[in-house]
Length: 434
Image (tube, rainbow, N blue to C red):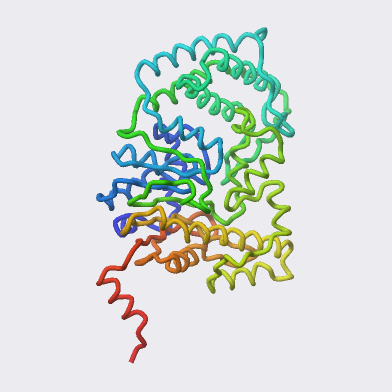
């Protein structure tokens, strides 16, 4: 199903163009940086191989890459997402904007930039982020508070103009921060306390106008069809989705303890989606694979339910991870077991929102814990087969990082009865050799 994609890739390389890095300079796809996001070329290449598909679903929508790619190709794209900030962000990213809206937003932005440069104007309260001083110095923090107040005062609540201005604001929040992106997740730059001969002062208002210009450039490039974003839990997609789909393209969170909430916190605090650290943990607990705050402490008490399906490869990995010699081995084994129990709930229900003969593509990455390899792609393959999908194949996409054993894969399959050819092939594979 993805042979065209596979033959164009050297899987010994990291193929960074298949990661979020490519999206940074790709119109609306570059509006928000989220490390776990996958790339426009990957989704587009998969779509090219399925010209029949009119409706495309991503049940782990994230920043909305899949649905928006489908919409630019003239297909009906739908995303299912549990994080409220990402639902809001996707609803803006998916909109079709008129030239008048873009022109009005640009004019408002010019006024806002000038007003927010004045020290004497009213300011919004800073968000209740723990250790906020490591995120922004006083000058940047005060500017952001003035900028937010100006945006809320200048643009009507719920309007396209305010939403576009707030997307630009989110970009400024990170641009002015001390956050560093020199590895797969977010860290903080070391404070430079050495004396400087010449102090370089940034013009924060100009930075806002630059970020707004980038956002409005993407907003001017409308998709052919407006995609749809639905708030809901991927463990029970049929509870939230009423339509059925011809194709599924998604990349679930990887079982590597990398929390989405870690990178999303600054945006969520500034826009009011979070008010305290416990809320962040609650959001992560509701998400598959979340481990932030209270989510980690709850894992210690978590026990598998009778709904779990545990393939042999998963059972073997859990035994290796939970070895008494491994510090926190029991906790991490619980994490992996819960991840795949949640995954099984998803896979066993997803067929209810797919049309017959629908194709699925799950882009996943394997992981290691204490030297034990977790073959995520193989576990997904067996689970898909158990859930009734046929022609389930694994295509290696790229090498993920310096660890030789870590790769990214596209696990593909089809819903419905297998074709006669695949039935014969499966029969031959299972029959004993003479």
